[in-house]
Structures are given as structure tokens and as C-alpha cells.
Image 1 (spheres, protein in one colour):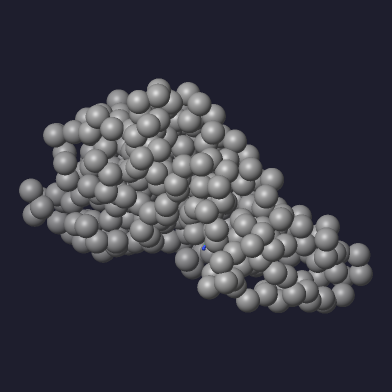
Image 2 (cartoon, rainbow, N blue to C red):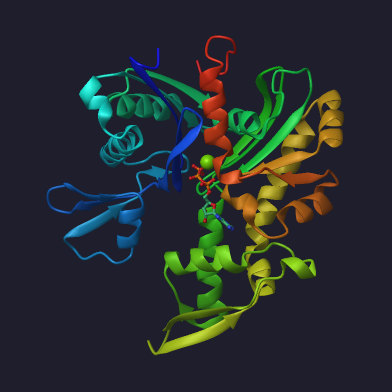
Length: 340
Ligand SMILES: Nc1ncnc2c1ncn2[C@@H]1O[C@H](COP(=O)(O)OP(=O)(O)OP(=O)(O)O)[C@@H](O)[C@H]1O
Ligand SMILES: [Mg+2]
């Protein structure tokens, strides 16, 4: 099988694309390309294109082809996927003309039209066979949960464009929500906060760096988790003079509060709709956090305090979907995880 075919498990995310082949991560890059504005010709892809983001001139344009977990710019998505698949397969696929089979994770909220465009762009990118798996199911598998058991498990995956909340039992999704409130909105919160409270104008790249360095969602973190204050360099909103400000995690926690509360509200709504027996299982098992948002300092603690159920962060939360997609690929035929 492996001599004549190649199998890739792909998490095509709004922020990052992760590809696994034979259980190994063969690609982990931001979901972005750079093209020539006039001709649309590809200039760079992934990490290399990200370096150009917010540094372009009118001749070069960077595009993030996905929005809210689904394809927003079809041409760009096709170019990106083709490029990533080439990188992931080392391009030898062309030489041996191996049969390429891929499985891609899709958000629970994806429409038929969204799935059609993933299907088309995967096929143009060279895939002979394509299956799709719902991302919360993939993250549950990736976390190592026994998703086929008669047992309620709950996952909250906070990505770049979407937050996926799902209760899983007997190999299927029982209750879920897929909302367009996630990491991108948190980054915007930081930009707005610095403009309004410190009169500093910053770009998204800087805002995201601040989020990584001191992003927190509790006003009081345990001492060992407290990050050093962050020195922000930017432009005064009014005077355009260069300015700096020292920002603490407490300020970031306050500015992210509203968006995090929205996610909390959705988690509670899903729990309200969850049948009582499954609810009891979840209380016992706890709730799993995945996606890049799970790395926010104090997130598990904050949700635990508000929801009164224990939250825990998955190991390597940014790769949970890709790992689970890969596992599902290997179980081929045995389990009906594919989106019909
Ligand atoms: N250490 C961190 N602290 C806070 N946020 C983080 C951290 N690392 C990554 N993120 C955020 O997580 C998001 C990306 O997560 P992830 O790769 O899971 O999303 P995605 O799968 O590409 O998006 P989606 O699932 O919405 O399609 C980005 O918004 C990024 O800023
Ligand atoms: Mg994701």
C-alpha cells in the first residue's frame, strides 16, 4: 500500500496548517501565501510569506485563504494547499506518481458549500482520495479519548478563527457549537486596548507576540506562571512619535475578558443542552482544551472556576486535530468518523 500510495492527515486551520505523514509532523506552518498583486503568481508560502505580512508594497500581497475555519479565497487556498502538499511529500510524489490520499479536518459549522470548496481544492492540489473529519472529533481522538465508548467527553478547541465546542459519545457528536470567536478576536482586543488605553498603534504581528508572551485570562496568576512585563514599541496614535509602554499580564487579562466570557457563555449553553447522563460523565472526566487558545495563561483555571467542572489543557494543543486526523486515517474502514 505505502509503496504505491501516500497518506496525509491535514489540519487546514485559519491560522496554521499542520500535516502528518506516517505519524510524523512533516509540515507546521502559518496558513498564508504571498502573491504578485498583478499576476497572482505565487511568491512565498507559509513561514516565508508570514515574514512578508504587514511589510508588503503594492506589488506584493499576502493572503490568508481561510476565514473562520473555512476557505474564504478559493484560488489562494488551492495555491497554498498545493504548495504545502508538495513540501510535505518532498515532491517525490510527482516522480513516482503515487496515489495520494488525504484526510482534512473541517469545523463542525462547515456548510455543504464550504466542504465542496475544500474537496475541489484538495483535488486540484493533487489528492486522488479525500475524506473529511469534524475537527472536534479529530481533537478528541488526538487527545487520546475513547470516543467510541458510551461515555460523554467534552472538547473545547480555541483556534484562530473558530472555537469548536463538542460533546462526544459512541463515536459521534452529541451536542456542539462552532463560533467565530477565537484567537483572531483576542489579537484584535489587544490592538484596541493599546490604542485606547496607551495611545499606541501596533500591527497584528506585534499584538500576537504580546499575546504569546504575556497573554493571560486571570487577574492573578500563580507566581510561577507570571510572565515578565512586555515592552511594547509602537507609534503614538495622535503624534506619530515613537513610543514605548510596559504592559503587564493583568492588563492583557482585563482586555481579553469580554471575548473569553463569550466563549465561556457558549460552553455553558452546550452543557445546558447536554443530556444528564452524559453531563455526569463530563463532570467526572473533566473538559479538554485544545487549539492555540488553550495556551493562554490561566485558561483552564478560569473556566474551572466559572463552570465548576475541571478543565485540562491537552498535550501539544496546537497539534491535537492533526494527530487525531492521522489516527482516524489509520483506523480506515473500522470507524465511521468521516463526514458524509
Ligand atoms: N502561546 C499562545 N498563547 C495564546 N494564543 C496562542 C498561543 N499560541 C498560539 N495562539 C493562538 O492560537 C491561534 C491559532 O491556533 P490554532 O493553530 O489551533 O488555530 P487554527 O487551527 O489554525 O484555526 P481554526 O481552528 O480556527 O481554523 C492563533 O490565534 C494564535 O494567536
Ligand atoms: Mg483548528
